[in-house]
Length: 244
Image (cartoon, rainbow, N blue to C red; front, side):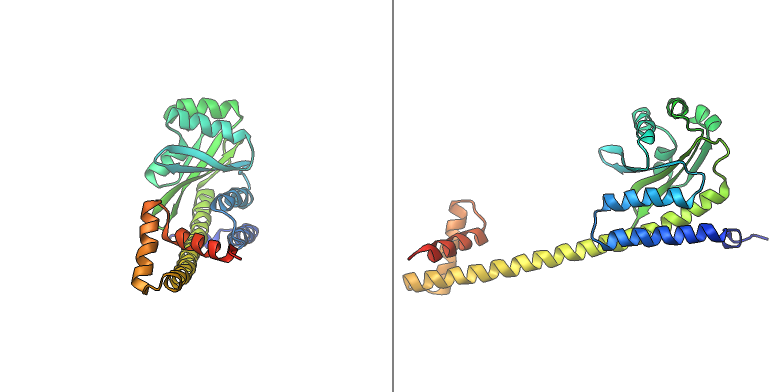
């Protein structure tokens, strides 16, 4: 009979995972950047998986792969060699969207260039899992160890659960950021509208024209000087305020 993972998860690991996720949520709630969150994710993963001596986060975009967070500079070289070779566990995890767990022996056969670089850095086991947020692939979370038997299926399952939970937190953060930007745009639009209305009033009073003609003058000024309408209105109001 299949046994759920919860029946085997040591309480201490569950506590570590819960605390790590709370810290990650705290980073996001403080309004820090996504890069800050990914750095926190790397540091948290090193606590959740005891055998993870070093952890990095690979980001992928149309320009390629890059390491955006790491717990130690040692893995930066290992990651860079992997990107240069175009193959390795983290790149395979991003391509397949599935966890990749391997030892140094596996690496020699599957990714010889990466394996050679990893061995030079003392890495003998690796575990990578993709980071997917709102069906968008951000990259992968990569664990490294000097012990060849460091990672097992349980570590892989636990890391998948951890990344899934972390992705949910990042999803909420990204939605909050989108909402915040929309609110800021609305505020700017309202401020611009108020300044344009004031500028129209100035022109109407100064030249005895109606609102439509005043607005037309502002638009003409904007087009002639290739300046945004709100800037034209703002400049006009500033010049009026400066007059004695």
